[in-house]
Length: 255
Image (cartoon, rainbow, N blue to C red; front, side, top):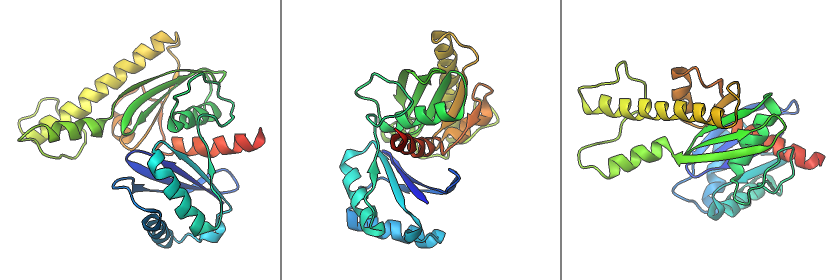
């Protein structure tokens, strides 16, 4: 089996793939506060016991990261746990995707790889992560471009941190746009406010790439909240990025 690890700014997502290229198990741990390699070793080993995973069943480890200060500690912890040297993939890893950016994040690159591998035609991939990103790729696998906005939870945390009377809330759909208590008002403002932004961005991107039929894929932790609220998102797949990292390593090996 192959262990794939996506080190993000908020979470580290793990995925285990079988010989049929299926992700059969996935879980996340918090990225912050940053931990030492010893702490990560204990954390990872404890998680394996919880899910009944035998480290000896893993024969390959693939890591993609957008958090350079944490990458080596994760590599060290997994190397010690599995006695395997992990394979690091990034925007310079060869794949079917064509891009000209020297600043492309590994997560966005992986999103492109998975989008091109799994879906036909032009695609727009929305990642509801620490940042809210929109990535467009062509039918031929050319990365057309990216738009980055503040993430939903990031924006909410900033709102709470900079106001005296607003507290943490659960992000969820409300029955009405207008509310009469603070929690309802904040839930509505964040959920429907960002939904309007997402729908507007989808329409603008489709117009810019001149393709109203471009397929829209959503991923990221909060994507599941927004997917049921709009007809403009074709599919929600929380494992889209981790699949992209898996495909990226397999394409690297093939090339």
